[in-house]
Image 1 (cartoon, rainbow, N blue to C red):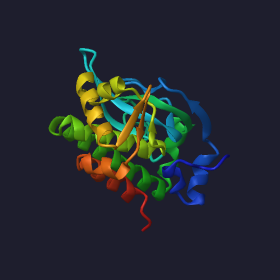
Image 2 (image 1 turned 90 degrees about the vertical axis):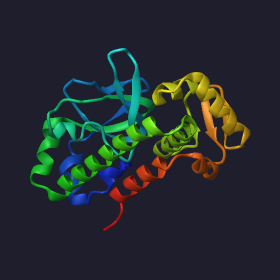
Image 3 (image 1 turned 135 degrees about the vertical axis):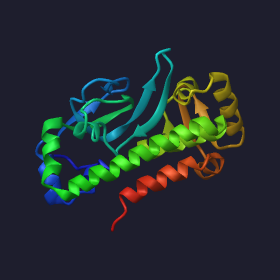
Image 4 (image 1 turned 135 degrees about the horizontal axis):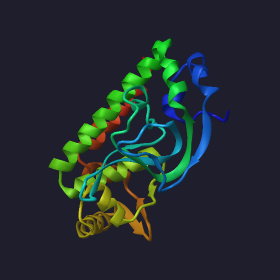
Length: 232
């Protein structure tokens, strides 16, 4: 198999990783592809190697809101695959890439006899829950400008790029903010020299400045993720 770029899998010692890697298959994941759907059975567990997946909750009135995002630091279906086997959110690919996938039945067998894989799953479950809780609080309490900055920084972290391949309209949909509000925020950030907008793309120009404009949620979630991979 090619080099493991998924940070969760790479954090495992080789002897533990060997329980999974012979069953892992690398596949492309394409923008717009649904890896999981709300209320549907989890049929694969995905460990992204590159790309970005949004965790989205859709309401009955056809409105939707992003409650989390996953890149190569995480996994899709990892906790649901061990529990009810049914997804509570839609996992939608926003940036194309690749992922290592494994069937839930094979995946479920690995932690049964391996405490380090069990610990990895438990820790990531905590990180993902923390991200969802922090995002919910952020969406409800913080102003649009600080939320936009937080979202751009988180997206950049997970794609390893300062070029965000999304339109302002899409950003508004993910944050539950009107497009006109997003346009006003982006114009102010661009005038301050923090970013540059081009057709279908947003370029982060001054990352340090953008961090100062973001709410504390960005650093809280980032530190939570970093603790997951900290050496004991």
